[in-house]
Each structure stands twice: as structure tokens, then as C-alpha cells.
Image (tube, rainbow, N blue to C red):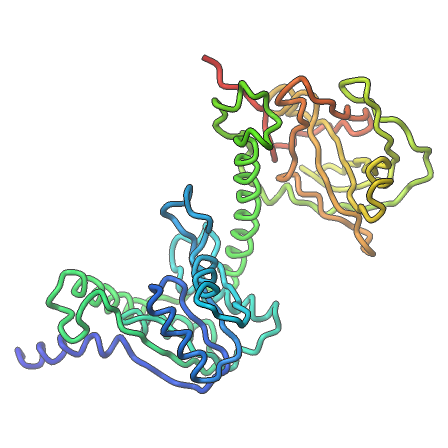
Length: 385
């Protein structure tokens, strides 16, 4: 029993770090591996005649305030470019709402992207590291059950693979991967459709949050901020409602440019030229609502290709949680469709909400909504001492 136990012990790493070759033209590199292994993957790509390089990655959860990247796929892709790699790098990003089962989520996200890009995935090789290999292969096979998946396992340089049990790191990694493998084999039976929905929701959430973070950065910069200079040192970020996908609605668009152009009233004597462009009809909170969308004729004169529409509106949250003067939403003129998406999570305040020196269009009475729109930007509150 001692000899058997010893034999199993010394061969556990070899059992987990398996390799399979398919001769595929697609190489998929897991983005969490270290840069030396990434460089080895690029050498393999060149020497084996691969034609498509795919890099996967989960969100970066450390140094998020200082890192220019939000996920490991983008960070690894940038490293690859700096290694003088000339081909395209396809990136597979797992959204930040995925906190568990990330290897499976990555495989599902990759399958979704392959379908979107119309890339063949009957054959591909997965490049990973060490004891993680067998579990990665198993999980990917749960998603790509009809595909021939190759597996290349680079060496984990953080411990000696031959004597993995001789260091705390090796012992911890190998045993945890062994347990995880048997859990995935015996007890992990996920619903792919549920993960697809979770990934789609997560990408939408990350998109909105990234836009908000970038806006905070611009507001904190004295060169780009609409705030009064004396308020910038105390700026701690804008306030928003939580992102809610139910406030992303389809609206029927009925173009109507028959009314004469008009001078829109503002908070100052400035009166920009607008015209009504369309009526937008949509359902929100079980009510049928209509908003008018306007075209900025002054801007259109300067930029003939401009396709933007301006939607100022008020709702029942004004003076309670949102700016009393109303809020704004911008959309693009659809090229041929008879509907357009209104995403109220992207609603923003006029600059007058931040400082009285700005001139802001007033909301036409016809665009007063008799519902609570608890989405988008809330009232800006200056930090008081």
C-alpha cells in the first residue's frame, strides 16, 4: 500500500499535465499563464504553422485603479504585440459578473465568439500550464463536445514537477487541481444556455460600468472636467442608479420632419436650432410612452454626416433622486430599421447640473414622462464641509 501510494503520489502531476495533439490551425492560449509560457506558445504557433491565435482571459481583480487593462485577455494580447507578434490576436473576455466556474464560462464565451466571428471550431489546440491542463481539457470538452481538442501543457516553473510534493506551492496546486478535476468529472453538469445569458448580461454590465468609470476620469481631470475648478479637488465620482437591463427597451421609430425648425430654449439666452426628427414609442413599467427625438441643425450644418439624435426628457424621479431640470439621452438614426434601442442606463445630466456657467437645452413639455425612470445618472451632489 505504501508503494502504491508513493507511485500515485509521484505520478499525480503527470496525470494532470496531459498533452494531446490535433494538428489544428487554431491555437487557444489561456490568458492567465505567465509571460514566459506565452512566449513559448508563440514559438509553438510559428513552428507548427498555426493560422489563428486566440487568447482568453478573466477580469483583473487586483490593481484595477492603476492597470490600463480590465481583463487578462487584453493584457496578454498587449504583451503578445510587444513580443513582435504580427498576426491578429482574437480575444475572449469573461465579464466581471462571472465569479465562479470561470474555466467553463471562458469556454462558453469562446464558443459564442467563434459563432459570431464564423470561425471553425471543429479542431483547436488549447495551450495551458501544468496541473491545470486535464481539468481545462475536461471542461472545454463539456462545451465543445463535438470538436477535436488538442492540449499543450507548458511547465509550471514555480515548483519542480518531479517533486511537486516537496514544496508548499506545488503541494497546494497539484492537490487542489486533482480535487477540482474529479469534481468537474463527477458533479459538474452545467446548463450552457444559462451561462450564455449570464455572459451576455455581464458584457452589457461591463460596457456601462466602463463608460461610467471613464466619465469619472474625465470629470476629475482639470483639462476636461465640466465642474467648477474649485469643486474638482473634492470630486469623488458621479452617482448612478444600478445598471438594470429592463431599462434597455425597443422603441418604434416614426420619422416626422414635417414641422418647422425651431430655436430650443436653454438656461441662457443661447438658442440652438433644432428640428423634430421622430416619435419614439415604447413600453416601460407596463405603460406605452412616447418621446420626441430632435436633430441639432447647427451641428448638422458643420458635420453633414452627423447621425445623432437628442432626447431630452423629464420623469417622476426629478427633484427626488435625479436632476430637477431633466436628463438627456443620445441615440443614432437607424439606417433601415423601424425600431431603435433606448438604453436609459446611459441617461446623463446636462452640464447645468454641475455648474451654473453652462447653457443647457430645456426639456420640451411634450417629453415629460409620467413614470419613474430609475436608471442612468442621479443628482450630482457637491461635497460640502
